[in-house]
Length: 336
Image (cartoon, rainbow, N blue to C red):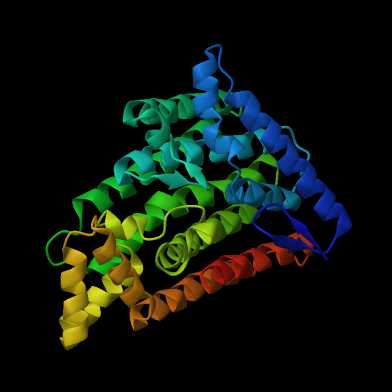
């Protein structure tokens, strides 16, 4: 058994390992090539997060999905570069919105160069992704456009909050299905589609990616509270400090409203206060880390990962399918 990529997926078959490793290496080259500019400063800013590393979760999914067709088909690697470039672009924009200081263990672009440069660099990456996408055909362009619309819609819904009478947890799950699930679903879809896999296989891997994407984001929610910066590569409690609702906080609020326990109400009051104060922020993090809402969020993460695993049932038994199942386990492991 060996390990593939920073995400730590174990692969038992040597031929599959070789294909995936070669594909991911080609994606790295493609990312560096796509982020070059005639203007050195743009190159530096655009390659800032590329060179910082990352899990390359989406390209990994593209490579595994491509195993159900021809993994060496010419569109596989470029489509993986497209989804990773799109993801990177959203990180530049997210860090501006969240006023984040750290990303992937390095200063965020907005901290280093300011908000304007960070936003424009994200736009530059979107442009480069679109340029590559144009060579993959109109169907690929349409799929990516629809996913990007869902991604942006999810971000807007998060900013707007749930409408009156809507359950905040249900609203949030819709938000992350758009913000995170949409692009991970495209990763599975592109890998299968570009490899020439059967349409039923494409549909299965799209559904798998959508469900896995939700589990992936829920794991991030847990990590934002439960991890330290060494584990997550970003400052713990970033979402908490910025007042961004994540599943553990939403579950806490639901329990406080339902049961009215004094400790829960007091913690909600703390969260509603000024968490830019380091002492208050540290207290909120410490109390959330031992609250049952965090464990419930972990259980919900497991449930979505199991739904993703169940979606794989129609696929033929093979090493690639085993690896996709283990990817579900890896996502759950991140959440502890």
